[in-house]
Length: 356
Ligand SMILES: [Zn+2]
Image (cartoon, rainbow, N blue to C red; front, side):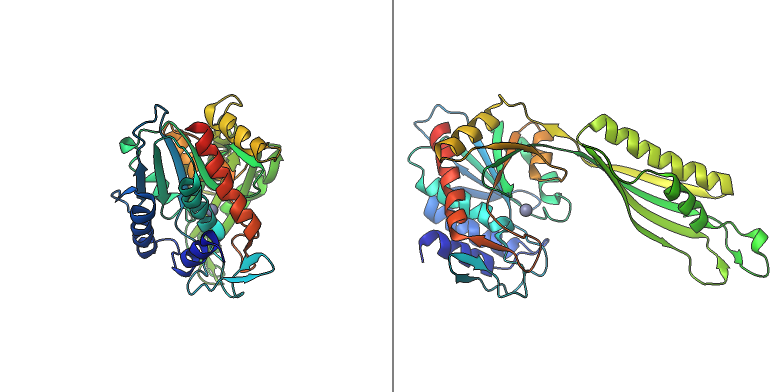
C-alpha cells in the first residue's frame, strides 16, 4: 500500500461526523505541522487554517479548501481495499467525501516541486448547511483565488452555483371541536394546503427549482387544527429569479391564510448566494491548464447545490470546485478508486506547480 492510500485509510478511520470533527482536525494539524511544516491554527469556530509560506516566491497566495466532516453513519469506518477500489465494510459511509479532498491537498502539496504561498482551510459542518465556512474567519486570509476539493468527476470544474432560499412557514388558525363547533375554527392545514396547491414546484426552468419538503399540522382527529408548519426551499442560478420565487412563496402563504381568517408567519432566509466565475478568471484558467496537462479535457459546470465555495466566493475569494473522485457519496456504497485518489493528488500538485 502506498503512503497516500495509507494516510487516506488512516483518516477515514478517525470518525468526524458533522459537529464531531475536533479529534480528527487535531490529529491532522499535528501531521501537517510535522510532514508539511505548516503553521496550523484553529479559528473561533474550530475550522483548521494551515499556512505554508514560500520565501522565494513572488506569486499570490492560493487558498485550498476541503471539509472535515462526513455524513452519518460515519463512526467505526473500516476501509477495505479490493481490486484497486476502497470501500467501507458496507455499514457506514467511507468518508471519501471529503477526506479524498483532504488527501489530494496533503499529497499535492507534499509532492509539488514548487508552489505559491498557501492557505489551506479545512472546514467543519459543511454537510449540515456550510456552517463552518459561514463562520470562517476570512478576514485573516490573504488569498483571493482558491480551489475547493469537494466535487465529483475529476475532469469537471464547477464554476457556479445557485442562490438558495430556505422558507419556513407557521400558519396560525383557530382551534375548535370538529363536530360540536366547527364554525368557530379556522383550519391551519387547509390554509397551508391552499397555498401549496397554488405554488409552482419541481424544475421550473433550466436554472430554477422549488420544493415543499415538510408539512406538519394538527394534533387530534376531532379538532380543527390551529397550527401547521411547512418547510420549503427554492434555488436558482439567477439570484433575482430566486428572490422572485421566494417572494411568490411568501405571498401565497400570507394570502391564502388571510383568506380563511388565519395568519401565516413566513421566514425567508438566504442560505447562500448565486456565484458564477468567468471563464477567464485565474481559478478557471489555472484549473483548465492543470487538467489539460494531465491529459484530461476539462468540463466547466454549474451545479444546483451549495459548497464551501458558495460562501468563499461571496466573501471575495474566487473559488472553483474541483473533483476528488468519491463515488456514491452519502451512502454506505460510497467508494473511491485508488487511481482516482492518485489523480486528485496529481491535480493539486500540477495546479501548485503552475501557480508557483
Ligand atoms: Zn462534500
